[in-house]
Image (tube, rainbow over all chains, first blue to last red; front, side, top):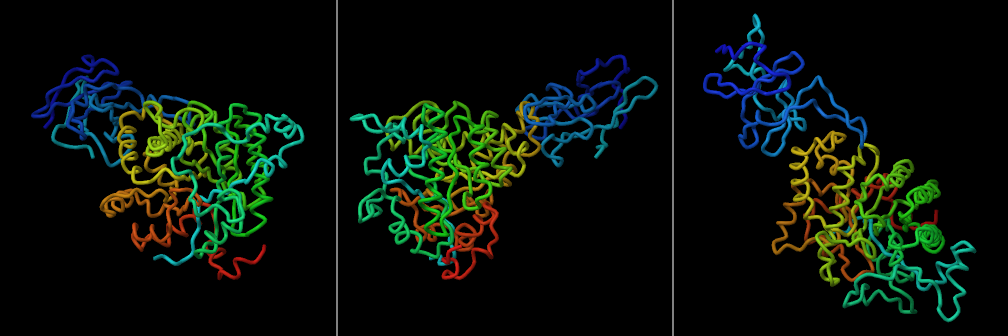
Length: 120
Length: 373
């Protein structure tokens, strides 16, 4: 099911907007002109993951240093702080553990979700 | 009972008097320590700690000819080295091991250097099965690193030993890193002995200090836990990927509980330590070994086995007697507490992996192994 969730201009950069898509709450993020969407349900304890903080992925080439990968938005669940990268929904500490990703596209200036299809 | 080859990873050798060690001090430090007239020598061992109501030594280990338990080679040979098919014993010093508890860092560094020379001269020369820890005064990590490198070419100085903590930070703190750089460079594991944290300086317990030996001994694992968490959180194993650590006399049944919590906390707090690339339990499994003594005595021994097995610790446990201390664990006793399919690994094979020894070299018939080398 395709769901139009608004115009591109309705989305503020680096902010997750929660929309209703069919029977699901979905968080939609605009990040550096790209869109990401995930179910608002943490796989850990079913918390509202999309209410959490979004940031670039913090990385470190060596102990004591801190860098940020702005190409990789990361969502931290407000319950317990578990972090998921939003491209594939994967937890940063386990590729096999993920929040459910919803395919999202921009068509004629509109943001469209493909609900009911998981991207992986 | 297990009757195969044994490597004992915690044997405390001791000096019988001050003179044994003083002769290894530099001339200046000898002058400093002695010649105080009626005041006697400057104490060589840290003057603090909790008294054990029984005494710290097994009464049967006092040498018949006098001297200190662990201070007489022949007594140790008869009671320990020849009592089983023991192939190697790693010596870990006695009261002097608290050298990092000295307030004077320069004196501590000199004492540590002298202790190592004493250990080589007085002990390693007596029996090819004996190996020694490299004691360091961690008050001065750069000097400690030099001391480690001084022994790089001596394969019988097998590990770097940390006991007391001169700083109020866990052993993973970067202040200690010169020690680990030298340990990794020279291929020596770092041994952290129970009471680490310590005997004299910062309390070895969390939450507050305690008042009896009973309490502090129950809580020895707390300091070890601090150091394990500190090592991993500070990324020591990312910075020194070939470094090995062995935890001595801190018990082992608590390890699964700590690592379960550690992994869970990492999932939520990774942002603080993005230099970690794996779960804490994975670093533990790759880098850390654990001595058997004191094995926790659950009413049902299977409870302990189940816990240890949950973290595959049967591949990380290395046997330690703690001879000649009061709470030593015997091989016969351990054989009854842990599954027989673990015995060869924990009494022999795991220690070979820890120290990088070829099992075949140690598998020689006993008579051949005793030949001088």
